[in-house]
Image 1 (cartoon, one colour):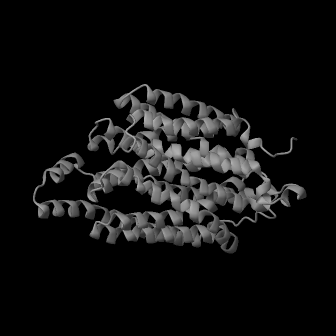
Image 2 (cartoon, helix red, strand yellow; image 1 turned 90 degrees about the vertical axis):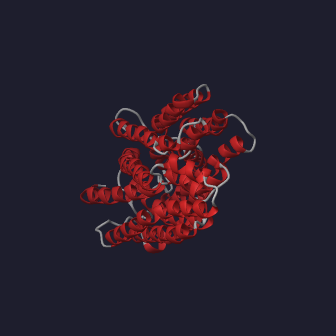
Image 3 (cartoon, helix red, strand yellow; image 1 turned 180 degrees about the horizontal axis):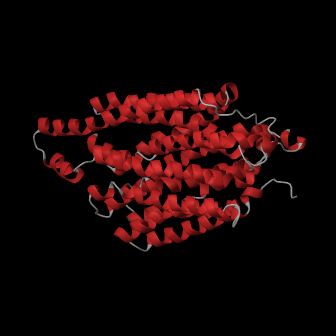
Length: 425
């Protein structure tokens, strides 16, 4: 452990930059949903939420291949490659905007998430392994602050650029009777994403070069003393760790709940009759609450509470706030959804290290399986919009039906699931 101390600060700074980058990209989706619904003339919210589906489903297909890439290239090269792939996905937005093609926008999002799956499969276990496992949640909380600060900034910037005067523009498009005028308005709106996504692509290429030539230390999970376990444990197959598989499901449900709180909050508000000019900023408040949660995590884990206790408290808060959403409407319900950010903040920092604890040589594969769980962000929001738009359940009931089972299972994992299959010490 002592031989790592000189490199820890450098590594933390570099990984913090990465967490900022993929936070910035990930939380653009909350703005893209209403933007693409308007620009591509989508019929309902279920269609619009294919934005989150295309983005998060990529993790399911690409995370496991990413672990093989990491084993071949090492952590640092994999991170650099992930950034290049993300840049390519951003470039796809240019022809998508020029043709106002929703499938092409979804393709760009899928490619971005392909790069992100590689980046996250490498960076998350890296930050867990680079120090003591019992304080991993604290380090991930620091990374989470970088991620959520980026997430708070990105929808404000993109919202100001692509959804400027959104309510008035929506009115104009709806009332336009001349097809040529309507097409011109829609094309003008769609072209608003070209400049920001060109800049994003350039920045991603530059960060990829920075990572490639950085002094980021490589970690061998087969020999690193902080990941060593008994020979009997190391010789297990990946299927011999039930706490990992239960953790994959836990992460799946957590990400579904996080995306609901962050990306679906604007859609929820719109369904409550609130104007687009207001709802486009709601993601900011969820991420602000998450930021507060990360700060609490930094000061309390592991000195005051363990990461298991932090996860338990977070799950209970999630259940309480979900009930609050069910019994309220309008801005009060929006406040409870934003508060879910506080409940969600410590979940990823706790679930990830608890699930990869003791995997030894299986760490990369276990990390990839957990990253596959991010696909929860693809499925849970679509369940919400289907309940609301297809089955026509009340807005708040549809939302809560999706949230309560997620938090109930996370509570189970915080109490018993993370210990499954482990030998008592």
